[in-house]
Length: 207
Image (tube, rainbow, N blue to C red; front, side, top):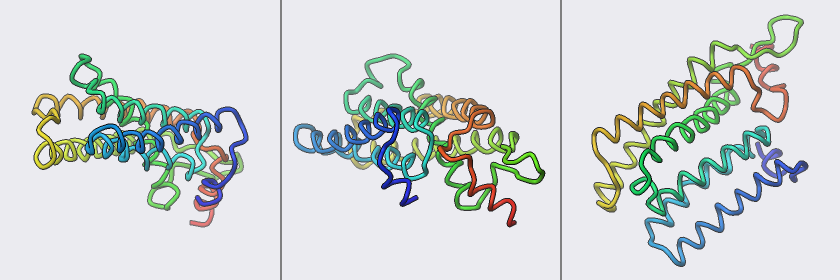
């Protein structure tokens, strides 16, 4: 992880992803200076999700997708787009939960909790296609539940401006789960790692 995080960008996609990360950091500073403390907190919550794709060495296209989605999700909250644009929160729950569930699946693979790849025969590294199709939607539902808990805690203890209702919560979780289904299918078909999952395959061979 350290090597991937410190590695200089080498392609236009990697430069773009790093630029989005810089925008995220500068956005937190700007929000702390010119906006409300809650806005700065919302912007800061996005930072770990912006850094994880680089730490995990994910492909530039997925890195850019994750960073852009997370930034839009965070700043849509700051600019109150979830209240003012009908259906916008559902779109972002679908997209953001989908990309974050893929990141979570990669973390579980890297830490040896679950194997998304197989190297059992001479044909080399192969994705276990059924695993992400089952795992990623479950992760998406878990992320959606945590997301809604955080929203409720914010509404209960920080600001009643945060919009929390039962239909909204259920709708958000349903779209988050559907985003996980789409992301699971994507992960089963398209590699998201910058490397060819070599170290995961080595773990499979040695297990």
